Length: 247
Image (cartoon, rainbow, N blue to C red):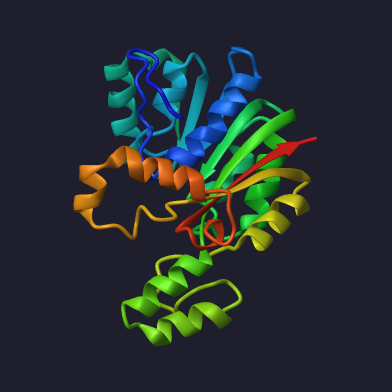
């Protein structure tokens, strides 16, 4: 679980707990060594700043100058501006933005759904990892999108998601593709990475009324963690988290 380096208190929410649990195990595995981290599409620093607070050096690549400006302010407020570097660029250009075999840990969260060529991006990620380096990949789940549209009465869009090869609901869909565990694993395997763990993220958090989330956030967080690695619950989560390693 994420903790603040300054306060030591848990900072993870039900929507990020499964990801932070995996990342924390990897940080512990490294035995306190300072890691070189690359956060592709890292935006305003929701992951980058806590990682920098934990003593790691983080480069955030994002296409939005506004997000990077917010990241810079956030890093400064947290006292870790010296550990975070902001680089403007999009995922499709990743190969030209990073050095080969330079990163110990790469985060690529909510990126492969919107890039033009996910195979090229995952190949660039694999090339940027040092041998033994790890990737935290977060992608949109197809099953959750199907169920969400169906229960809201959008049956045509749900049917389109079932049959569309990329998992889209039609030409007005804001995402270019969605994944299941098998398709995401195949993508990483083709890039030369070995998937070690697969979890569901936001298994129930997106389904619960706001009052439940507010009244007992710890119970929601505990349930998310309990369900995150258990099929079929894992597979109907809003997002899928795959943790993979370069051999």
